[in-house]
Length: 136
Image 1 (tube, helix red, strand yellow):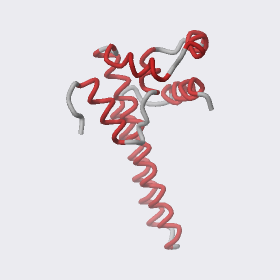
Image 2 (cartoon, one colour; image 1 turned 30 degrees about the vertical axis):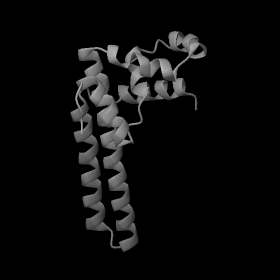
Image 3 (tube, helix red, strand yellow; image 1 turned 60 degrees about the vertical axis):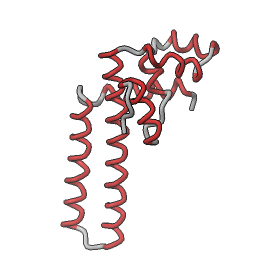
Image 4 (cartoon, helix red, strand yellow; image 1 turned 180 degrees about the vertical axis):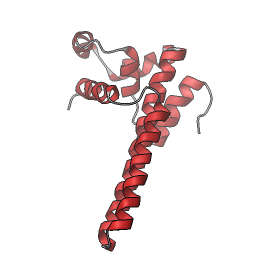
């Protein structure tokens, strides 16, 4: 999938989330907690419980990824994005420009797409740039 398609998919996903990143994180992790609790109460199969626990961990990791991504987007709206222009220049070129304009992608959406929020080094890099201090 092309990067701009991924940004548009992320935009659609964001529209279904809570207003504040911590709210979304809480909602997602609370659902995972309740689901695991129900499975452990009602299912006796050790293999099924083990698989449910793996899915629980995956849900938490995804929740952190969404939290960091949405938090960076919120911070960019609050403090500006000047520090990230070079990141965007490295990732997108003139060929992408027409589609970026057509889809009305914001510079902040482009910035967020420059980082892999499954990689803690990338999370640290993004937040360290915006905070001007090492995040982790």
